[in-house]
Picture 1: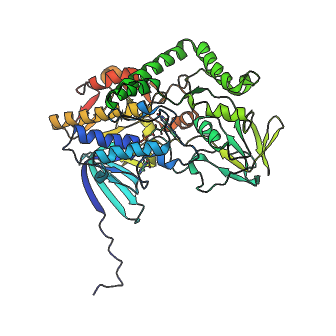
Picture 2: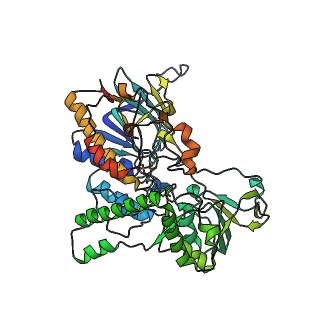
Length: 500
Ligand SMILES: Cc1cc2nc3c(=O)[nH]c(=O)nc-3n(C[C@H](O)[C@H](O)[C@H](O)COP(=O)(O)OP(=O)(O)OC[C@H]3O[C@@H](n4cnc5c(N)ncnc54)[C@H](O)[C@@H]3O)c2cc1C
């Protein structure tokens, strides 16, 4: 009989071993799993995900109208044709990802409801150990692997960023962040204020417009928008010619990417004319009397922040209909009834939506240790925004801001598979990047040049991010056109890679 006076012996932690551990079952993690299966079929792997299903961004965001703001021909994977409208709803994106999982038998590799708490690298074992909590049973479980593929995204999924304004607690109505949209929020015939004018506000407003009494988009400063038809003329044309969908996918991707590259080049070289075109497009929808200067003319150059796409001009149509309006002003404080602005105007509301952005979250809020020493990611320097000095056997997927995220996730996946194959050939158990002798005097800079790109969540979180060097190898360049040619040719025997 067991002696009940003795403390119960704690059960051994269940531990599993894999070659590769993938963190996150969003579009990057599922893409990574696909590429690994295709390119390295003998590699064992597991995808660990804290949500109850796949999709990442596309299941955690549930506000009305949630959809992509880039086209799915390029946001979709390079290997799986997109056959719908270019701007897709979260549901359509989830269905597409579900097909990728089913067609490639990936489900067996994914463990949902696993929240990873810690990641520890041992130079003796040359392995990573991830400790996770199973959210369904509360059990602690361990996963040991040679290589860690971080596909955890870039922001905290559990809560969004809400600035604190004076007297928020005085407001008698509801304050909602789009990331935590209550399932049964009743906004029928209610007055709503949406604080912010980024992609989230631009999506939300036209989608609540019909139901609310009125919705105000309250912005401190204006944002650029691109209104255009949610249709892909070239794809539709090719379809009428009965061209194979895989061809259409590739051709349309090339068309879109070329158009984007030209647009971006023009935005840098002739920002004023690009700006004039964007404003003229808004004017077409809003009419000659609308105060475009005040509400839709940003002070920054186009492309310094992501430009939100407005499919079929829906945001502008909402404004034109009178159900939505824009107020450009600053918040003085909240009141019982709504928001008092610096101009003295008071906006009344039943619901205030804070579409004010994300909490940048590097490495999935996981506590990292290298040989027992806490890793401060900000002490590292990035190799092409994928690997980090002092962090062995780990690649991180951070997509493009200006082009579709997934373009880079596919490129990084090819790189990881090539690196793993190279390590196998060399019989290396460890790879790490390190500055080369010729990089010794290279200036070390913050992760991103805010002159070039400066959304709030990046500038707020810059101190948490790795640093970059002045040479292109040591930067996350945001340049798909350069990286698509450079990545496949990265010399894995370069002195920047150290094997062990
Ligand atoms: C509303 C919205 C719309 C967007 N639209 C576009 C767009 O149109 N085009 C574009 O290019 N980009 C867009 N983005 C950016 C978008 O986040 C990325 O494009 C892309 O979806 C990110 O995919 P991901 O798999 O890398 O990360 P995520 O989608 O963030 O998925 C990461 C996954 O990792 C899991 N995870 C994180 N930490 C842990 C942990 N500790 N333990 C276990 N699991 C963990 C998360 O639960 C999540 O499921 C949008 C972002 C938002 C918020």
